[in-house]
Length: 338
Image (cartoon, rainbow, N blue to C red; front, side):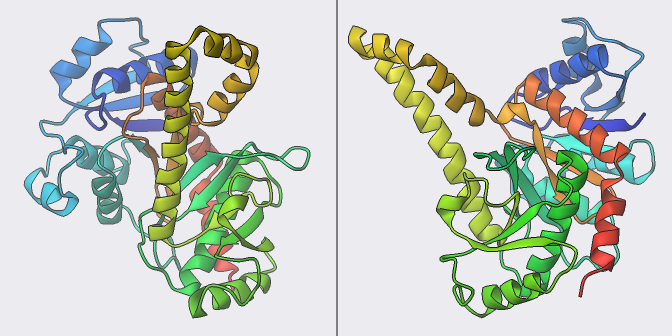
């Protein structure tokens, strides 16, 4: 079974929620975890509840990178930070993948420092999975969007590679045999979006390895038109934050309505099933984390506000990706690009 290195000190609720998530994994799966962080604090949290000591080892790291620190400066001043120690553990073969809810910039830069890009890969991509409607039998209720922040601006060749990497990941993790690929654009017409997107559209249509459905617009993100949606990191990050913000606003509106008037509480009760369904769609803890794709080793990035459930699910995704040889699948896909 794979060994997953987990950054115990990364995230808004570290180390408590991170450690509890790993403890849950130790009790309910056969996945081994390497908890990386302040050993005394990690052990103290472990002792607060049940866990399987045969499935958890602790690797001491005396420093941590805060969520609001500049990533470049933090990597220079905190060389023994938990995320960097975890990355080195994987690079040295002590573990097979990394999971972290920590500083996103440090995660991406650290992966670039300690992992190698797969042959032919120009740039890594930070992906995210997001809820959407489904339109055909067997379609995964979660779509994959990449890049969402690792590469701010892209050339057409990099967008092609993102499509191939995302398709390979969806085949392995979502078990979609032939994922539908869409290019995020300002219109569905092939000539939309400027020279880079027009070239990317033309080249994607020429790729025999992927099922390209054409350009998709912002309102298509929550529909089942595409399983994998490709964009520049700047655009993807804006989209990701917008989706997260909409989910939070919806929950706030429901809570405020419930607190203000009895008649609204009655109405919400009648709509409870629908509200629960919407909440389930916007609950990021369901899938735990998202991959940084393009490296020879695996990195699953959790949301900074992740609680134990999300961390546990992220560890499971990481273990699945290791077992299903996702980097090898991506390498094969990139090797066949035109």
